[in-house]
Length: 364
Image 1 (cartoon, rainbow, N blue to C red):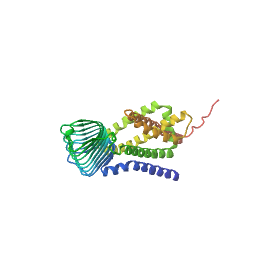
Image 2: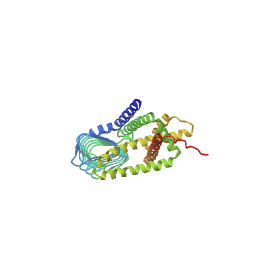
Image 3: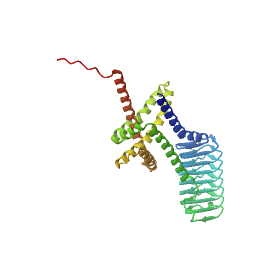
Image 4: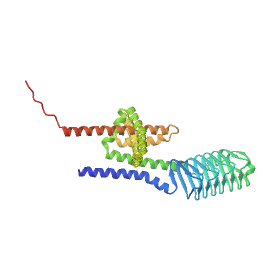
């Protein structure tokens, strides 16, 4: 009994540590004006000190008194938005329709300063296309396939560029100099470093969770892998049922009002289960593939599965779908494993209560 209690405490401690390592950085980030993933919006009338975002879309309609650093998604400073410091942005598109008092370093598929946009400091941009219809109050350095200066554009300083310069070159008050050494990578952004740093961090946290699961529940983890290998379609369908059904049950519970606290706790538990399901799914698929070539090392399967899942999730278009398949397989295998464990426990309990049947007397 003492050994079981010690094991239970160890399980709880390790899982709490994993959750803290995974969640606390996000909590600290939120308190400091930083966020990873999702959509970050500074609403009109709202004021924040600094804003940092990784992997999400950023929209500034209000005021950021400090700087904005955003990597990974679309970045928009609307016509009511104001940034008191520097703007460092790397994403699909960067649009400045408001005011940036400091310097701008922007990279993306497209970078645009609209007619209402104003940049107080130096403007540095590297992109597929750069359009300036607004006001740049200092020098500009632009590297792009296409650079267009609109009729309402105004550049108070010099323009150094590389690319196809089109439009209103009279908008430049200083000198206009072509520099073929710039290229589209002129903007010194943190995009590659930050993206890989986030990927490494996510891999490390997932590896810690997976190692805890394999170490603490070796038989159950092996059963998860067996469930996926023996019946991938069945595991996937069970996972789909859980993925759709549990949220419906939680919503129904929340509608009862008195069940709201339980629904909130259930939602948190379900979110943790989805994380565990994804890790288990990647592990199980890798274990399945490795077993086909005669390798049965569960730790190698965990590392290969997580590395493969991280790489495949970065593929455009299909990456999200592949990750969903891993999740459904893992979630379904977990559900099947828990059901089988519960059934075996009930059978053992029934045998314990009933005991072996007495031998019936025979008659001639």
